[in-house]
Every structure is written in C-alpha cells, then in structure tokens.
Image 1 (cartoon, rainbow, N blue to C red):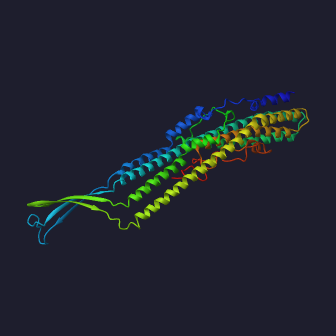
Image 2: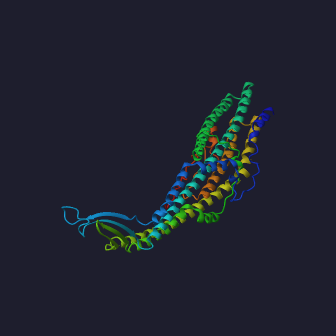
Image 3: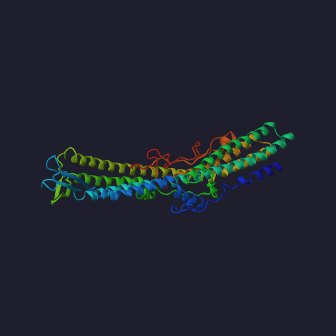
Length: 474
C-alpha cells in the first residue's frame, strides 16, 4: 500500500491530460494562435526587423521608380559642327557657305507607345509587390512553424520530466525492495538504465530547443541567444479545420502565385499591343542655328521618320513572339490554379484525418493507456506482474501523450500551410518521440509517424517542392 501511494504521488503531474476539457472552439477568422501574445510579439518583430522582408520592400520601391522612366521621352541629342569653304583658313564671316552649326534633335515615338511601356512597367512593379507578399506570408508561416515546434519540444521535455519523476521514485522503491529481499537486482538495474536513457533524450530535445530558438531569433532579427518565454501549451490548443471551398475562395483573391500568373497574362497582352505598335514608325524633330560671323546667321528645322523596311524579320516576328508568350502565361495561370486547388484539397483531407486522430487520442487512447498503466502498477505492487511490465505500460502511456502532441503539431502545420497558400507539400512540425528512444522499448506513438526535422524552411517554407515558396510565375 505504501509503495502504491508513493508511485501515485510521483505520477500526479501526469494525470489529467485525457480528462482535460478542450478550450472554446475558435473561429477561422480569429484562430487561437492570434490570441497568443507571445506569438503576436514574434510575428510583429519578424515583420519589423526581418532583413529578407526589408529587401523585398526595397525592391518594390525600386521597381516603382521604373514607371516614370518607361513613360519618359528619349533624351534629345545635341550636335555641334563646322562647315568651311576650303582648307587654307576659316571662311566664317567671309563666305556665305561657311558657318558653325548647333543642332538639337528630339526623338518622338508613335502615339501610345509610351503609355503602353508605362503600363508594362507598372505591372512589373505589381509583380514585385507580389514577391513581397509571398515573402511576408512565408515569413509568418516560418515563425509559426518554429514557434509551434518550440511548444512541441517543450511539451516533450515536460513529458520527459514526468517520466524522470516516476523513474526516480521507482528506482528508490526498487532499491528498498531489493534490500529487504522482495525485489530483484535486474529490476534495480533496469530502473537505473532507463533513467540514463532519459538523460540522453533530454540532451537531444534541449539541442532541438536551441535550434528552434536560433531559428526564431534569426527570423525576427534578434540575437541568437535571445530567450523566448512561452506560456501556451500545445496540448491545450484547439484546431478547427476549415472547408476546402472556403480556403479556395480566399486563395482566389489572396494567393500571390495566382495573382502573379494573372498579372502575367495582362502584362503579356500589353506587350503584344506594344509589339503591334512597334510596326508603326517613330519620328524625330530637329532644330538648329548656324552662326556665320559678320554675316546674317542661318537656321533650320527638320522632321525625320523611321522606315520599318525590315518588318518581316523584326516587328512581325516580335508580334508572333508576344502572342506565344501570352498563350504561355494563360497556361501558367491554369497550372497554378490547378496546383493550388490540389494542395488545398489535399490538406483539407489531411486535416480531416488528423482531427479524427486527435479525437481518438482524447476520447480513447489516453484514457485506456492510463488505465492500463495503473492496473499494471497495482499488479506489480501485489507481486503478480514484473517491473518490466510497469515500464512497458508507462512507455505506452507516455508514447500516447507524445502522440497527442505530435498530432496537434501536425494539425497546426496543415493549418499554417493553408493560410500560407503553400503550393508544395505541408512542411512538418515534429520532434523525436519519447517512448521508443528514451525507454528503449515499444513503438512510436500512434499517428505520430517517424521523427522528422523540427522545422522545414518555406517559405520557403519550404519543403516546398514545386514552388519552394518562391513565386511560380516570377
């Protein structure tokens, strides 16, 4: 009875996960993450201080300066000359056909060409602004992935501490039983072995925690050692999947890649219009004055027109080229829309499965694995079960609790990828499972899958195969 009491006291921090009530379901417009002041602060710092975002913003302003340049007239040319009768001496002022000459020439394009060039430059600036928008979305997604990865690691560290609490007390109890002849040396050695394995796992998790902290600090422009204090816990987050139709509707108006592809069509159409106008001749006007010394000065004005005599090899070919480019941009827009639709529906299906998995954890697995552990613990106290069985059932319980954390992290990863309008696969948020590595037995937690890198950079986020977070059409 005394042994059971000690073990129960040691396990008090572990009880209650399965029975915990879910927080109120947040709406999609106001997700739980948006109410986390720590995450809000991290996102604010990243948007204010991230150098990649600052670079994209500067490039937008630089491209906007191209618009007035494209609309401007070509620079006039100034020419200076001399005309003289004979080679023996200057005849200016003496001969009527000898003079200095100052000539100014101004090229003039066919009406409409400058306006089209300005529109094309303006569309180019809009495309650059969409690159900025993609950088912003990917930056926010990367911050969220790193933050929830940090919550996952710290949640695993808390589970590890729970295991350590049990093993410390179990080791003491096993030691006491061994000394009075009720336990075996093998049980004592096994408890010591598992305690050392926990220390190994702790070191690994602490290393992952430092990597994620460094990632967050890099994204928000802080020193690498800057701490990030978290108050939220991953298991308390509520994840609610949105329908693929609602996400598709948002993507239609917000996806940078899709907007870029559509702007590409518009730019190609304007370029085609300009190519057709280029078949029209350009002009030039000139004016000059010719001083003749003591004689009356002369002046002249002129008008020139270009002759597109090589139109079949140049201007007509340019028109055909732009027609093909317009067709290519139309196919690009269709391709981007189809891929975006595919990714959104894929993730909606993944979210449905993940939410079902979470319900199984909360409503079945955690309750059952806790009951299994407590029953085995009672049998061990009564001498009807070996110490190894206690460790195995503890391993299963901790694995299921770790699996819950991994499933919540997986759901958050899907949610972030949907908000990011990620054109590639969903970048994962995952750390190594505790039970199989720390306890040296048992399998990975149900639904958790194999351990994966803690953060995949996206944006890009970018386990982003086809688009890598960069804009497909840019």
